[in-house]
Length: 191
Image (cartoon, rainbow, N blue to C red; front, side, top):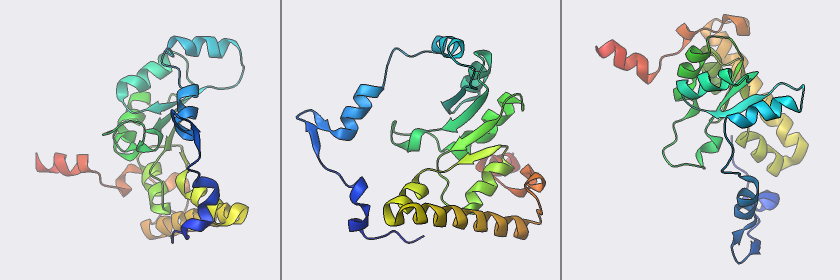
């Protein structure tokens, strides 16, 4: 993917200061983050809606288990773009641990690090039921509007289909754990 010239990112390049306390993005984060939120709030949320509740930001086996205990209808493995906390693990590196903890009791989705169709393939092979795409879509939107988003989605689809063909997987159901190797696999082979 070729990154378009900076002048085409007008909607994302704002340096406008909301106040003397920082940028609009910082002000937004400060206004929307509630440090008092806890697992107990899921019960309240479930009491006011019939919609399924998916919990985003799960990165560990323990949090996946807790999410199921509080009644999550699904789990989204996410490090929120890797920009909230330094040294947060890559989502793909913890996906399999979360999938194993859940044991297919609830759907597991992955959000973060998806740039190519091969990333989608890897996530599906490691157990994700769906893949969320952020940054490439934002780049497509900033560069070419709706047509840019469509182009990004078509590129991901085409790359996934090519990867499936090269791996001998005629359908999504044919993608399995045997199609990928991880750092964990390499370490186990050394033992």
